[in-house]
Image (cartoon, rainbow, N blue to C red; front, side, top):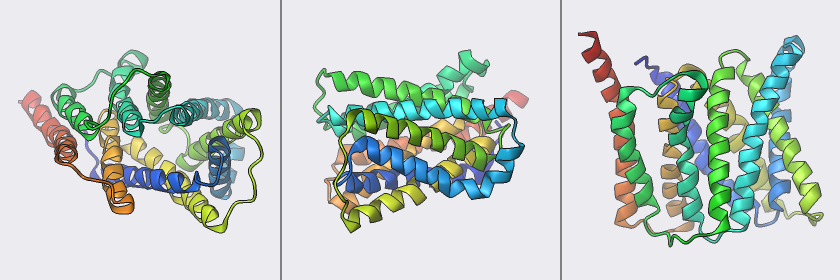
Length: 292
């Protein structure tokens, strides 16, 4: 298994920024409509990146631009389905668990899509990740609801995006690919806002602060780093690393909102880290064994 520890560290940092985005978003949504928040957040994030990739945009052929934007619609669909699911759900932990499973679907989708079967170590490490995610949500009261269907659809769309994003990251410059996708998400969010939301009143200054941090750090920087990491990291290892996001969310929510950290969540975090280490170290062991 080919490894690149720098790419892996970049992806780990991207998961931390994604987790911070949960905090930034939760605070910003106290004063902003959900679809408006997503639309403005991603549109402004794409404009922040545009000056750094404008020359590459002019040089790229229209067909590749359309492909990159098509991948962006997958991300936009996932985010809009996710935010709608949140609006009709009272179980945030349930939704987080379902969304986290999207990264476990990625290698399985890559099999029929790109003829890339998961590596052997995937089947050994993934049960520990599933158990860890289950323990993180063990205190959730699971009940059948329409929001579960929306969360599942959002997770599937996110898994498709991760697969196609990894493919086109090899062909299109990182900043340009990220910029185009964020622009598409922003446009989709604003269209949804105009269709379903009323005009928001003037926002308070502290809401703008959270919004700006979500644009710069949790969106622009996060998706650039995620694309770079996907470009250089093992195709199967990348989604396993992304499972760290809910782990960071647990830690940050404990620090920021003083949420309880029961023993089941501690065990869940340990199992997720163990799954990642098993995949990272065990994969090398499998390669050496096959080479003998």
